[in-house]
Length: 157
Image (cartoon, rainbow, N blue to C red; front, side):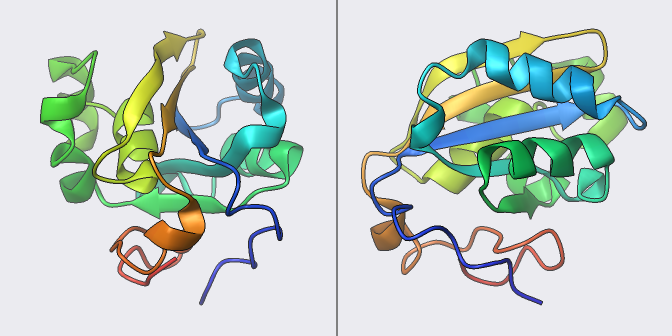
């Protein structure tokens, strides 16, 4: 199953909002955390996270808030981003199998040349981070193996 088609201007948007959360995190907590770090809401092209959190209402609430697709990645794919993380965590690794979720998911979706513009920021039960792509997502979609939806992370965007 493929994600809903991105909005027509997704090609101009260059930011990916990476999210991590504990199971059962209240949606309002994650939405408030996201709002607190996003300076340019119109530039968010995707919300990204770990595949096992795809059905969390908090994740879906943030994607709905920004009107963008929720994309997910396996722990193994996020672990591949470890060298680029600003805040890798052995504790996160012990729980998820990857050294970071929010930063890694943002970077994975934003592409190989992406950079973190906002490192991991925490609330009581969640984390967010923002990565900026160096190219439009329209161009990336033909080059990446990132997730297209929370259903199958092997499909193309």
